[in-house]
Length: 448
Image (cartoon, rainbow, N blue to C red; front, side, top):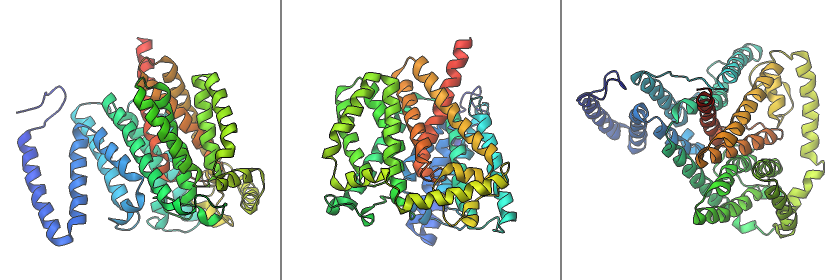
């Protein structure tokens, strides 16, 4: 029994049965030799691999749901140099995408407005890593490789999503995963903060949810700032009354969770992204939201108001960043074309720049920074065109959410180097790829 040869070169159910039997024996061996945890990881990875050949959206959705709990993904299974569940699952997704395209006799990479800038950024990133290994002397397979892989995954996820996601049902599933993941992080935030929610602000009150690292609170805040625009977009476009008002209640609770991260950059990023979205949707809505924000300010928790009002003051954190930025500008001026290599700020500056733009210019050079800005501009342009020209509400919802998330990303990374942390940028990377595909299809249809 064969699947239609017009779609597949050769797929026989008997071969799949033999492979599944062999896999079952392998899993039994792993169970007795390494325990249940490794066995489940291998089983899930195998299931994702097989499903990725026939429905590549499924493993991408599973991975998207798991990635926000990256500490689990990185510690459950780790061989060093960043070889963990995050990398293994993603490698299986990419392999399945390639094999599936070959079996269906499709182009592995389709035309889109983001292909060229992504390839340019990958070129500069690899060049920076090689240059950094010689300039700073770190091992090509050392600790820097782990963080470097997380950095370039942002671009590869965008490119993969553009080629993988096709059916509306899977795009809707992506929205469901976003809301459920945001709800999970909201719950974690309140659990961690409930005991001190009425106190005056203190740095010790900052929480990080499931996000690891010293800047976990800033990362959690950025996650909310870039993820909530998609929920806001569903509210603006859905025709289902109970869904709209249910999500209105949810976003109010989630914004309160965002407030309790005490990330000032995340505050500004969220308001900026939501403001751009409402302005595009309806300027009257923009005016209403501005008034609601202003008049609701006295109702905010006292600690949040204290943290928000500190934006206008130059505290030690702000002054420290300005000093580092001044040194970074001097270094960039000495090597503006190709920079100094990956992780240059860790070797050449007193501390992290807390600024993506300075980091990229210092590591890769100003041309790479321009390529990144061009990539995000192409995504925003494609999303804007899809929003105005698409006829279905799903495309409009996705496109407006991408615009809001993109502007939140652009502003948020002025106050932190978050581009290398995939859980924060996952939703934007996936949806930006989908919207770029939609834009090219609309453009092709109009040309015909």
